[in-house]
Length: 173
Image 1 (cartoon, one colour):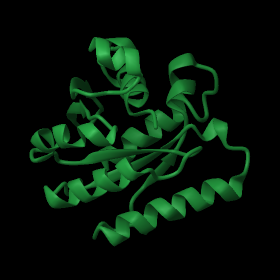
Image 2 (tube, helix red, strand yellow):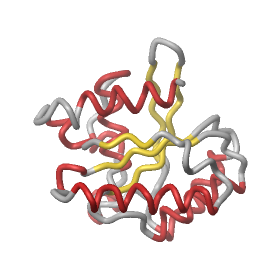
Image 3 (tube, helix red, strand yellow):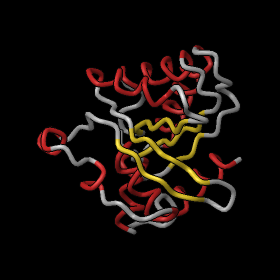
């Protein structure tokens, strides 16, 4: 979905920049291209200081998230626009509800891989339904569309840097 890429993109604009490979550092993570352990980064907006935990998405490792989630003030749910919500997306939402995460903002990532505006709309609707089903205010939760990779590569300001700044404004609100 791009959770670690998004973490790197946020640090690029709001903190001490950390490359993807600095966040996803374990040898097994590099070999398999997935995040297993949680990584901690910090950054700031005009309003707040953030201690950000990059949590694993792979279903086998979701339980690692529980320890950090109990102290979270909010969460950024990352969903690939190309794939839509996956089983781990549902697990993350359920877990956030169970440990009492009070606020969620959604980043619909990889929008540059989807040419069909209707498909994007369907993915957004599906995410909102999942949130509502898990007792979050699905209709009201901000959903920001963008591309973490575009932000990292400076390839498209609108879906890259602008989307990251919009995301953090929503998180700050």
